Image (cartoon, rainbow, N blue to C red; front, top):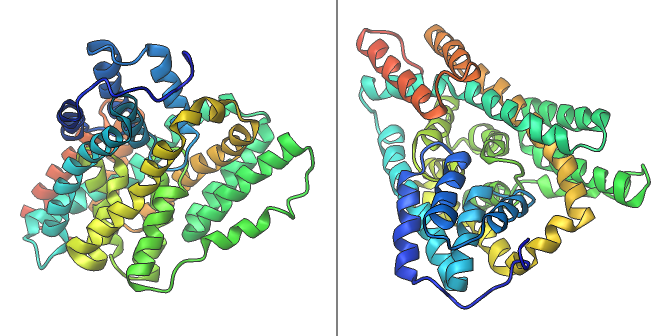
Length: 387
């Protein structure tokens, strides 16, 4: 990294950071690739605040951290320009526009008895979520396979993640951690014994209920997710639907769809889960808990990002957790697809898969199109899923 990553005196006003990062938060439709592109255009191409190689190294370092990488990149770039206060201002400006939009939409879709056309829009967009998960997982495979030290181990980790997401959703955290620790053991310590790392599974034990449970679910999303926003689905689905009954399966599908079509980080899906659990207060609590680790990682460790990239333990851990994450994202498509209840949703799911996998449309246009189709079907009298 050019001269390393070192904190310097603030070179940009907090007002500029608030304005520019807020603009990206408002315009950031399309998930992490869109966010990274907007940040690169701003910080490297248009303003010249960061050198291109420093920006690319920051992306790599953020990808080694748990949690939403594009959010951490937004916080880090704001830190480089405005110090700790700049990081807080920039990160909040990046997150808050999407939070306002998604909480407003959650109020429409989850409160009372919305009209049929709204239910149809939600059912249509929700029908495509499983295809979006497959699309996201497939997109991560080339880079993940390219980093793997062993093709056989990559397949093993990916299979473990897929099976855990499909069958035992809340325990996917333990699987990700064990796969990462296993790779450390195999590559750094040179032993195949996993006895010393299996106690990590205890970290997957959920809280018993109430706000404590909501905070725990959000903490898993923010601190224990690796490799992209979609891995939050298996972390949340079982807890939100089966364990605590905050949402129905249909509502959870709607939550994931809302997280895809609104601006800002996909992790904001957790705000819909929080809204289902405890209204606006629950949404704000879940969001604060889910994003707090990202701020902590950057504020506490940004000076050491260069060392993180070169640390063999960190790289080995991600080389194990990364394939498991890919598998978990792909495996999450199974319970998402099984949650569909109407025949026409299966047709829309197949259509979404064809559009996304052929790259004819992006995620946001596909889900919006499915939502429009759902409205048309609802107005035509098609049966709708029960909320």
